[in-house]
Length: 387
Image (cartoon, rainbow, N blue to C red; front, side, top):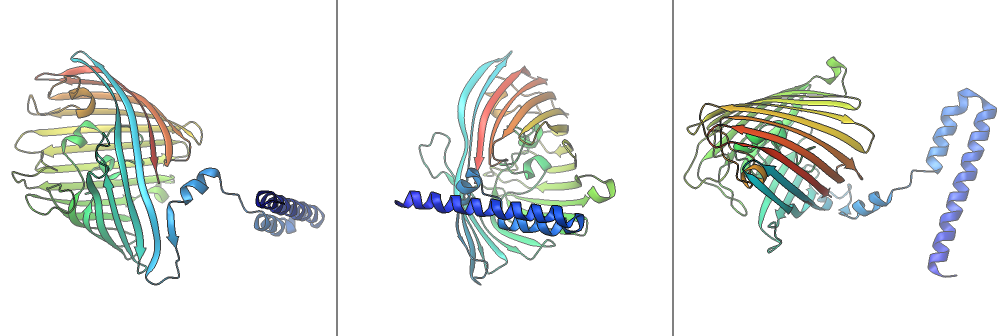
């Protein structure tokens, strides 16, 4: 008998044994009555554990090492993501379409000395001419528990809920126009975050350079955030409110957080059963212009795998060219700046393996009024994978 036959025979024998034991447990349960039912069910679950899906097995390969009893090295995991998308913009200013390798990142995560995390992750250029383009994250974090986490190195400064949410988990292809106009990006700094009771806090100071590894110099950006968890008092699955403040000083060579000197954002995230709503107010103030924006994003889980997403954006500025359209879509099709922006998005997300493997499709109408302006539709389809 070959190895494969032996393997299948042993597997069949295990399944048959589990089936017999489960059947016996159910039979005893029926005889013993309702009082014995919990114990019998527990026994059946113990002898017949849930089998891992093929996706669990594939994604499980990313964990290279795990030993929680090792005092030095507890875990090493291979990390990465790929986001590919096709978009076609049809507008009064022209049209533009392309397939884009939006993000391709690779790296390693490690947990050491029980309370420390080390992350190094780099991204490739969209054309894959070079596998290594630059490090997006390169940091060490000390996790002292839910109340305090200190992170030092190249990381994501967390301002606005949309930018704070990882690209692995966002429900739309693109973050809102006004969020992108702040010019956010990963950069070197130090931050602290945690939860004290129902209170949530975050603060950090960051360099406005964006070197390939660790860049320090130029202007600096400081961020402070305070939030509160309302889900118990409001009897919701999720209910979080946050208010955030950003201050940025600029240097001639700065590449991130360059548009506004001051920013204020407040967000309310709600979820009950299949229905969710993310709402945010955003204010930016700077030498180039002042701007105010509103974002509303309702979601509805049609099934466990299929999600309907909507989003409405409104933004206005005190300057005729104070707002800049979405770079990838509106600007590429010839759209120009303005002072009044409205956009509405409707899309579907299909979760093959949660956010770790999902298909996305959507359409967005955008209208920019002012100096040059823009009006048109952008159609998008794509796939997003992370591990």
